[in-house]
Image 1 (tube, helix red, strand yellow):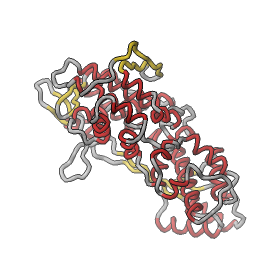
Image 2: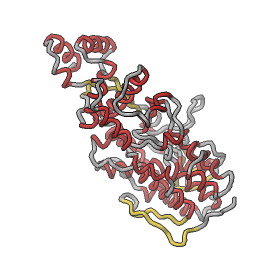
Image 3: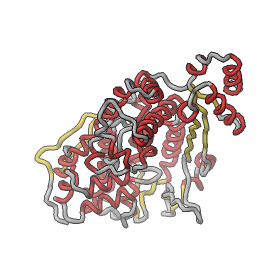
Image 4: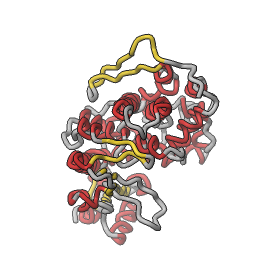
Length: 427
């Protein structure tokens, strides 16, 4: 591999609240950080609408990406003296770690569901397309951008370097748990990362953990479990996500029916038409989305205007546990009778997480297990050794909630109708 970019004349550092310092020694990494596409990540929050629940959650995908790079760099430093580690792969892994989220859009997951786009595909397009990122990567060789894309897509033939970025105990997960816990102000996501890094060992099949570090890994898995249910799936955050999704759905529906918007839809037109280009996508960030939402507050369409007011001013939907199918059908008809459109104001939202699992023959989805390295050299899958992990292994937890606008229900003039709706919601 032709190494046209070498070491920096002087190491660069970023001050970081989670890792204290992020160290950059390579010209390649420094140049990638400076690209237009990577700098865009400063304008996309790591946790989407979570800032409406935990006000400190304003951190960006930029800071998370730097954190994943830093954890990977530290792992590689530990691996340097191990025979099973190939030092020639160092810059490939660091580039993949840095760029693993480069294709994320504003309010990523809601955005993707509404418009049918995939951030992983855009990550690949940014790495392989006509971009500053691609031109920087090309300086490491003709095939280097393809290899970086393959590592992120988990299709690279080297299982070890893929596992550093994408597995059940990887640099990505370790950074977002620590970072998200720090910025939301909760303690659930904290675990002993120093211990975990010290007991990681490279093998041809991926990273393994020395069995002496099992308890640190147990703590990490439980931290992840708690973060999902206490932070990532928080019902208030999900309420904001529901409203965000409904705004985008409503705007798209209005566009498709020929509605004339007061503000030119220059950023949304190709999205609504399903042919968004890479350059259109890169121009989108959360500042752009907020700009449109603030404009749409003044639209003639009452549903779009109301939903945008709710999102911008944090007038969120209330929620209750999921009602029966029959009650749901009744509620929908009552809402329609009251002049409240159930398509936009009566929403079922589901959250689901699998805290840890291992590959089971016959399943379509291959999960890279966390393997323990025993003192005698044997490899054992984590849940076979840990009672704590075995207890939650393979157990998917799912939660369903029904979201609705209490203020609109309270404003219903027909007292009998209002009473019927509230009776179902309060059961």
